[in-house]
Length: 112
Image (cartoon, rainbow, N blue to C red):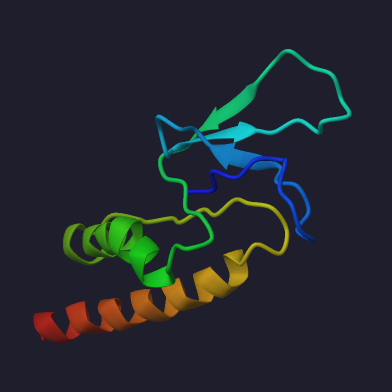
């Protein structure tokens, strides 16, 4: 959850987005203070993870169900990540791939 606004004090640049105060799965685009606008742009997602989220939390919330479906029901599974450059998608997905591989091999061992 990134409930920070553009009026921060310090050296941190202003945020480009925040989560909705009523729905953590909706992000709201924050407009630059120098650009006059009366509109708000928001986007709704199945899940939104912020800076404090861990790879294990994401894996447990989403990926483990996909791995279960692939291994036990023969379904295909896909994970798609989207986000701003340099926000940790590759780092997070590396951890997810490692955890998924571990769980897939565990499922295979159980079936032997």
